[in-house]
Length: 291
Image (cartoon, rainbow, N blue to C red):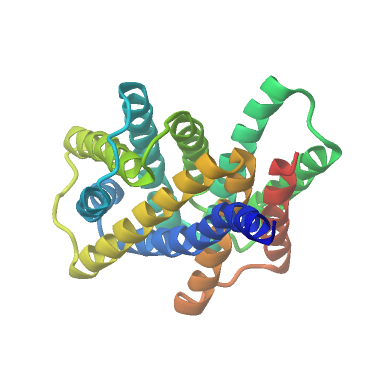
């Protein structure tokens, strides 16, 4: 009885532990990729980082010797990767063009809200906590994007907000697609990276972006790729062995790590009201997915 209770606790704790670890990995990855995109093209940085990520996780998948996913799961993972690749490139551009502490929460907010709305359409009306989260989210977005006399551009609105919102929609698409895939987290992460490499490489060729990477961007791209795919594999495991909404809500807290690194490394500062908006956005993420 004691043994079975211990196994139950461990099995319940594992998805949560994986999700929390993914928060730190994704937060650090986003900071690294966004910072690298300040000196190099965002699509080039994303494609390069995903090639590095593919090499790492492919080796891990081979070492684990798990069964290869089914055809349906492979297609879902490819779709998730393609959508996620575009989303991440836009997100890196948003982080590079605006303040990381303001753009990151917007993407996380939409990335958590849309899967929750999908669940609402299937399961029914949201709980009062989720509804409250929507209200907090609206307030947060208004505070973050409200005009100020000394804003980052002539209109007073922070740069990168629109791209961050677009990235958030893409992140939601990644969550929803990868949740449809089942099988080895390592192999699903590898397959997803094949889709993202194809998507971002196509974008690089279509836009004729310069392929040269700054030396610092190369190092940061490798770091971003390794951390991003490791976080993705952990998220896949958490969503397979636990509830999707719980995995989404916990991992959507990654902007807190990005914001912390931006303040420590880049010395980012913003007004009191925008800081309140940031806190509200971070608070809204768990409220939205709590239903």
